[in-house]
Length: 67
Image (cartoon, rainbow, N blue to C red; front, side, top):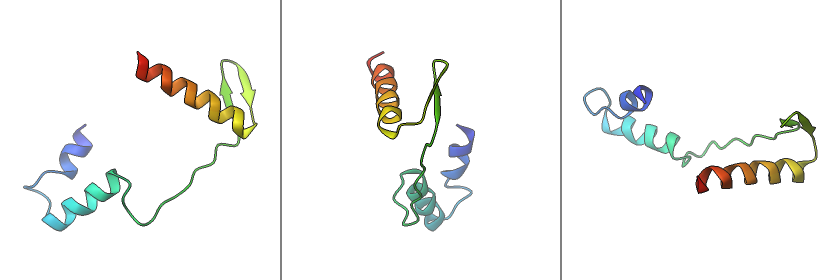
């Protein structure tokens, strides 16, 4: 939390720097990177099939949102 507080402190940053930081945090920057998960361990089970990894991650996040 302190990290973001410093990034958006108007006493420290210029308006331009505030916009740069906002774009970085909100993923609006032009330099987008893609991360691939080749292998995942879930409940002591190694998963390497991309669709299965996707399903496990989606189910986990859905459960987090519901609770």
